[in-house]
Every structure is written in structure tokens, then in C-alpha cells.
Amino acid sequence: MDIIKGIVVTLCSPLVIACLFFVVGLLFGLAHRVLARKISYGIAAGVLLIFSQPYFTDLLLYPLEHLNRVEPDLENAKSLIYPLACYYSDKGDVPEISRWAECSLQRLTAAARLYHQYQGKVLVTGGKSKSHENVSYAEKATALLVSLGVRKQDILLMKRGGTTAGEITAAMAFLKDRPTLIISSATHIRRIRLLVDNRKHISFYPVDFISLGNLAPRLEIPSIFALEATRRAFYEYIALAKDYYLRRKHAAPEKDPEKESVVSQ
Image (tube, rainbow, N blue to C red):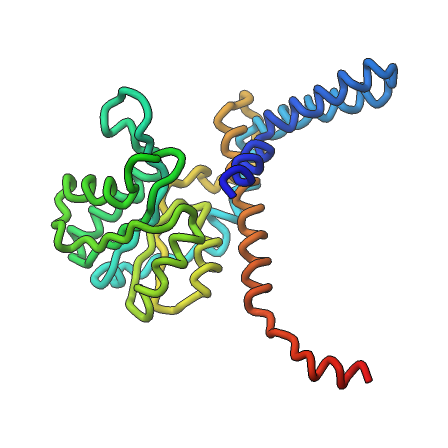
């Protein structure tokens, strides 16, 4: 599964897509197919020019981060605050704070601030993964929350879940009908809402916004950040489609072979 995810993440990058078309163009050139070579080179250049523009990135991210955005019910934070896991790396010789990805820091910092304001319990999930093979994300997240003033006895630790879907599946049996404020990156909220089946007692607190929601047409200097943001948008749409398909498949009623035989007769 990790291999498939890695392939999908790589192929979602506009830079990789442009390189692939460039290589295809080289192959067409070796085959003396001039028109096909020019078309491949043109597509490669077009991909880079279009998706390196922050405006097109904002267009892609707007439906994920800003469309139909609902204000979170902060009263849920009096019951349970649930920051989903992101990334932590145990590789290299760097300070502890540098091991955390931006998404992790924003989610955990938001959880600590809401905890101090509303005094709800904090649930942390996340097991081991390739980015932290020797440690549990949940354990490291607990240590960071404690350093931010969250009392250890108020932290509910669940060392499970290597993906967003896995975390939600592990946590849902615990959440049940308990009012919960889920904290995650803005691009993930739609997918999480789908995974929790739109339960009324759950509210969502988005952080780690990639776009500003500015849809005014504009032309800017090509940006590497825009290319990376586009990759994240493409990946999120693919993940959303996958989870939607799996949810529909799981919700579909099983066929009764006896009824099918009667119909076929």
C-alpha cells in the first residue's frame, strides 16, 4: 500500500508529469516523428507554465479548502479535541522541533490552544510509518502537547493508524456519539467529513491552509510552491475519489442469490 501511495504521490507532481512528456518527446524525436515530438514538448512546457502559477493553484484548492466552508462548533472542544496525525521524521541529526512537518505543528498547536481555552480531553492517534520507523507518532505528539501545557492525564493515546482513513477507522469506535472537534489540514476536511459519515456531533477545525481563497485572475512569477501545492491538490482529489468509491462499495447492499435466481427465471 505504501508503494502504491508513493507512486501516486510522485505522479501527481506537475514537475514529474512535465518530465514524462519531455522524455516521451525525446523518444518521438529518436523515432523521427517531428509533430508528435513538438506536441509532447508543448504539453511539458504548458504543464509547467500553468501549474507554476499561484492563481491556477488557488482554483484547484478552492473547492477543497474554501467552498461550503462551515464554521467549527468550538463548544465540542469542551468534550474532545482530536488533532489528526501528520508527519514526524526520526531521520538525521536535527533539533526535535525540526523533525515535525508544518501540518503536524499547526494541528498540535491548535489542539493545545483549544485545550487551554475549553479544557476538553485531547485524543492523539498514529502509529509507526516510513517517516518514523522507530517511534510512534502518537507518543511523540503526546510529548509535544505536554510541553505545550496539556496535562498528560487529559491526553487519550491511541497508537494506531498509518493513513487518514486508518486513523478515522480506529478512532470512530472510541468517538461514538461524543461531541468532538477534529483538527486537520484544510485540504483534508472534505475527505474526513466523508469518512465520519457526516455525523452531527462532530465538527471540524481546519488549519494548514495552502491557498488564500483569492480567485481574482492574476499573473505572477512562476512558483515552485505553486507546483507543490498543485501536487497536493491532485493527490487529495484522487484520495477523495478513492474514499468515496470505497464508501459507496461498502454501503451497497449485498445481493441475495435466491432473489437473483428468481429474477433470472
